[in-house]
Length: 354
Image (cartoon, rainbow, N blue to C red; front, side):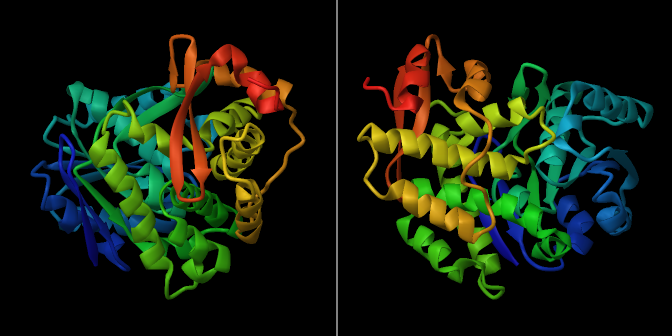
């Protein structure tokens, strides 16, 4: 087991190691003294891991219950949060008790938001079971839900008390879901680590014997950014590389026809094509990004047009007044923030002279 410490307003450890799922209850007991645990999971993960997780928490002395919701980004809604509140109320959960997010990014985001808002804040543990959740969404304390107007527009910053990542759970992922996680790993390398990107280009980073180290390296990149800018006032916005366009595409497809990882992959290509045309990004960068995305089973083009998804950018969380901060690359491994008026964004993406 490897441990990474995250130093934020509420410090916590990220534990990475094979077989940790069966130890999750005992590992959670080290940082939480409550008597009750509610495991939140989705309909895909429930038959795979809920039984083992529940046994682990029961053995650690928790009165344990499981709440299951229909899988899918389209179910990341306030209505599901209300159902979680109902279970917490019926079970007499206090601030000292524990919520457990068992699953992917949707599960983690919703469980964290419920934890942040139940009794104005209770402990929660992240047990991410997808690559995307292990390397990205379980780390950093961003929680939230989608509303019809946009993705993650309702949420809170609320750090978990522990993250328990078991790479064994990745063996149940389809190639498509595994590739979704690779999009976030590629993003991390793009903005912070050119050598890491080169290992992704060669395929070395995803060899079975290297995968755990790759997960740790991606987590460590995000950990460093979060520690320096927990509440996303500056540098943390770099972690949104590919996400401005990606979130707009997800909204265009009604959060059902395009997965988050694929949307981020397309977003990285779209924004880098534009910044390279504008002379803000080193020539050849978008070509390298496209090649590494294709190598790892991710798309580099889509049938949606700019006019289709551009309206979805209007509510992007990186807006400040009439301006927006775009996460761009100077070159592979060096991200930077570029502020521009939202009104000029369409022209920027079309390659019009600014």
